[in-house]
Every structure is written in structure tokens, then in C-alpha cells.
Amino acid sequence: AHKIYMQLMNGVSHMLPFVVGGGILIALAFLIDGQCVDINLLSEAERANFGTITPVAAFLKGIGGVSFGLMLPVLAGFIAEAIADRPGLALGFVGGMIAANGKSGFLGALAAGFFAGYIILLLKKVCDKLPESLEKLAPVLFYPVFGILLMGGAMNFVIEPVMGAINTALNSGLASMSGSSKILLGFILGGMMSVDMGGPFNKAAYVFGTASIAAGNYDIMAAVMIGGMVPPCAIALATLLFKDKFTKEERQSGPVNFIMGLAFITEGAIPYAASDPLHVLLACIIGAGISGALSEVFQCTLMAPHGGIFVFPVVGNAMMYLAALAIGTIVSTALLGLLKKKAA
Image (cartoon, rainbow, N blue to C red):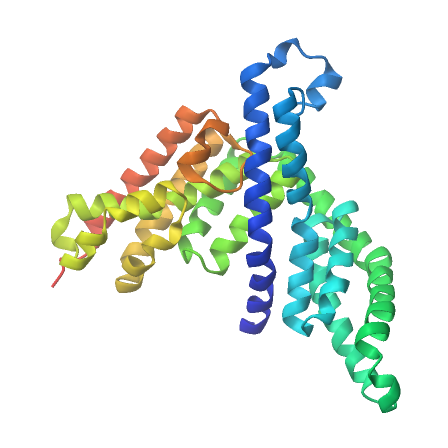
């Protein structure tokens, strides 16, 4: 399980720069059009092109779209690379591109990455039995030709139909969610961001949020980001209000967590969670979950996959989003003061 997780994280870590850079540029394009154009005066066709109406917005969205479009091929390619080294890259990129252009999307790229890696491992075993003169051709001829052929066949006839159906059903389900179900989803995603603060649960929620942006469900990313901002902010506030609950070193480094939290760097809370996991994690999960749920209640949206307060200009219903962050932070802070024991 750890090995699979590390292979997955290799893909995610290489994917994130494309997602963050491209996503923020796309969000800025929407912001510029939003400031310069009255959407109510646009026709249905013009609204479909919102984000590309003014020249500057079109320029930013074009660049951001290219970067964002590389997300799935890079994810699949580097998962495969973690399994089978460099020979897996080509297969992963091809599988990820087929997923990006098809219906399977993120789930298809995920499956493609692992499938590509194992195809190369299979081909390596087969090629080990070849004569030495032919074995040298394997990396430059047999792996790419037969590997990409197998990858394309698997994507078109197995992964794309199956994962495409699941992905379509998932996105349709998200789009149709309303009321209590959407609020519950916001609570779960916000809480997941605080369960391990940068670990598998955190990354699963984050990747789900970024995939939702690509599918046009912008409220999901809003709930995810606010859930990741609460823990460091709450800990920073708690070190100021409940000084007897923290050591001298924790109090000194506490205010730095305001900056980290507002910049959506959840990992700033890790040292505090490590020193008292039961109480700190419980307090942070509840507060982060409440913020995520309130984000859905207030119908907040976010088109950028990262940035914290620096992308608040592109948040839909930004003032209520800030209120949701404040409420979650206060709840977690109060729980930290109530649950944590006095420092020795």
C-alpha cells in the first residue's frame, strides 16, 4: 500500500505545478472578464466563451488552458515512471492524453499511469528472453512501439469505457447535488484536508477538488481550500489565546501559522498535531469540516486550485467565504482551548 501511495504521489507532485500555474491564470482570466464585461448583457454563445472575451483574458486563459491541459498526461506519465522508470513515461503520457481527450478524465489517467507502468514491467520480462543483439533494441524500439500499442488498446477498449462511465456518473452526481447532500460533501472534504495535513487523505481531497475544476464544479475546490486553511490559522490563534496549552517553542512559532494558513499551506500545523494528535486533529477536523460545509451553504466557488487569500478576488461570494473561514477557525480554536491539556 505504501509503495502504491508513493507511486501515486510521484504523479501528483509532478502534476501540481501545471495545475496551480494554469489554474490561477485561468481564474485571473475569469476575474478580468468579470470586471470588464457585464455577463447579463451577453448572449448565450458569448457566455459560453466567458474568460476569453477581452484580449488580456483570452491571452491568460490560452496559456492557462495549455498548462492545465497537461495535468492528466503528466499525472499518468510520472505514476508510470515511478513504477517502471523512464520507459514508462511515454506510455503514461499517451494514456493520460487519451483520458484527457476522452470521457474518463482524472480516473482514467490514474488507471492509465498504473497500467502503463505494469505494461513496461511485463515487456521487460518478455525482452529478457531475447537474444543479446535484440535485447539492446528493447528500450528504443520494443518498449515504445509495443508498449504504446498495448496502452492505446487498453485505454480505448477497457479503461476509457469503464472509467468514462464512472467519471460521467460522478460528475453528473456532483452537478445534481443540492441542499444537505452538498453541505455534507463540503464537511467531509473540509475535514479530510485536516485528517493528515498533507498526507493521503489531504491529497485525495485536493486532487478531487482540482479534478472538479476541470469538470466545471467550482464549489468543490472552494470547500477543499478553506478546509486546508483552517488548521494553521486555528493553531496560530490558539497559541495567542491559550498560552498555557502550548510550550514556549510552540508559542514562538505559532503566529507564523497565520501566514501559512492564509496561503493554504496546511502542513504548518503538522508539528502541533504530531505533539498531541488526538486533541489537535479532532479540533482541526471539526472546524475545517464546518468551514467546508458553510462554503457550500453560502454557495462559494473557486476556479483556482491554490493560493489562499491571494486568489480571493476570484472566489465567488468572497465575503461569505471569508466568514466561513473565520467561523471554522474560531470553532477549532475554541476546541483546542477546551481539549488540550496544559503544557508541562
